[in-house]
Length: 190
Image (cartoon, rainbow, N blue to C red; front, side, top):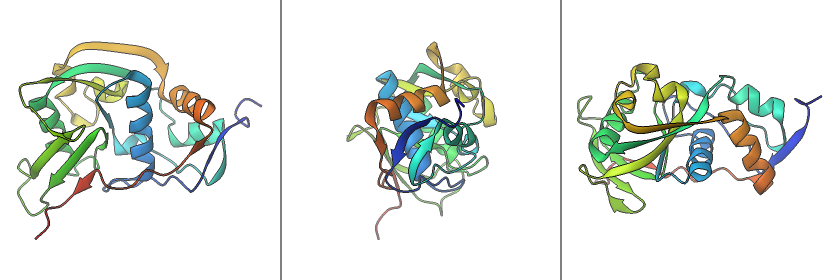
């Protein structure tokens, strides 16, 4: 009975995409960033396993989309570390890393490890020397999907709140989810 509980609604289907920015990835990253007050959030594409349907969203739908026992974690990362994570995500080796709080311009024609053209945080250029408050899931925080940068971050705090529960709480607080605009990743204009 708990799984069949309607927790909220979606104005359109929240779709996952492994090698592209996706509405579901943006939404989940936004939930983590909002729930922690972080400046940036990262969600691995492989952690998204089902779309959220248009219309009523049940707890079962959220569990299907996020089936892993991951909690929401905050940590402190330098701009250089944020850049490392983005470059790794742009290899597509483990799918495109899903983001919140960032605007990324990249060139897919460049070699892996050198694809970033520009990165903005909250509308301002990423400062490599500055420390940013970052939210992610416990899988990535421990270096999952070969992301060796996360375990080197500082001030790691595990909220002990499951990502599923954070998304359910978001629906309860806001009621309806609208797919975010897919504008966080872009390629340079000619």
